[in-house]
Length: 156
Image 1: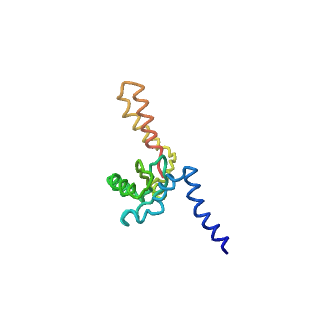
Image 2: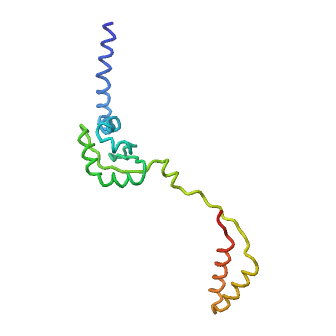
Image 3: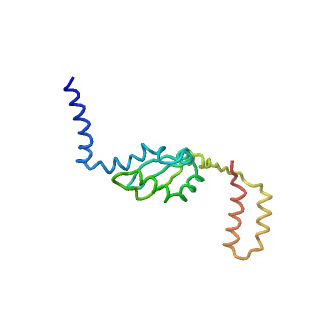
């Protein structure tokens, strides 16, 4: 039994030693923000956002909607100060905010399908007659094409 206590004690010392030798201490310190997120910031904030990743000492924060994104951007300096106070050996350089994936998908409008419906011949003839007053043939033809397409293409 004494042997296992020594082994446990050795492992406890090995992990910090290994992280120090490998240069992981700073990364571990930076990523402690993820573990302590709800303790560091008020629940009115943490209920609407979460840390996403750290890239080159910049913390990316995923927010639930664009309103919260804007609100948190106004508080960037204060949030950065709070988060950096919790770090022991490293500091975050900045914060970036992005909207949660689910909102970005709902914001996408469904693709509208265009269908081609030929305008009635009498409507075409009537517009051509009205356009005859345009002297420049290129302008008249362009206007006729525009009119035709605007009446022939219908959104569904």
